[in-house]
Length: 278
Image (cartoon, rainbow, N blue to C red):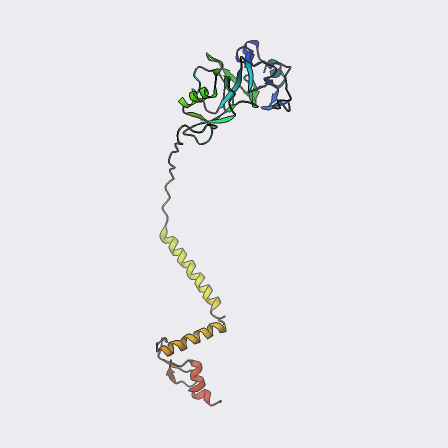
């Protein structure tokens, strides 16, 4: 897009200097080492020529324009009356405000006491902003003209006080007030069918227990048998009736015998059928 002489006047004419303008493409500089102070780069082409070639151009921040004033920029994400009656450049997703300050501020982010994430940034030394009338991704950076072109102040403290009055702080100096975070409201949980869940759990538990018994019962070790026998002998010595039935019928001699004796003891000592073979 060609820039007319009328559009170049104003802010663009004040910033159209060889040590401030930089050729860019898709917001990236086409010159390497432009931030190195030893490599003092000067762009021979004007802003109008850069717009004809690349349809965009960049402006270096942190450079003196006149009378010891540094050129800085504030990039703000939301549209608001941050600077009243101050011209700004409207981009695809942010708004650019230009500053003139004698004391060079640090590069930092901007936010208020209600937002957790930063809402903007302060570009100082070693930064770059895309100028107005540039076309990036098919979107034209429009210059919204107002009464003043730059916000002018002498010290960083003056800028900090101006932003504090509007509830905005610089991340370098911290918050002026504690963070106001609204309480988190969780959605109501849906009612659960507890009875169905418990029935399913019981069924699965019963099935698992049956499977465990079927696996463990036929494979009882001799160690377990010895422990059971020792426990039975201890109960007999204590006189505790640990057996469910007091009498049991022998399958060989068809006689009933006391459950004080085990089946093996009965067949070894008292069974008439087994004593015949001894």
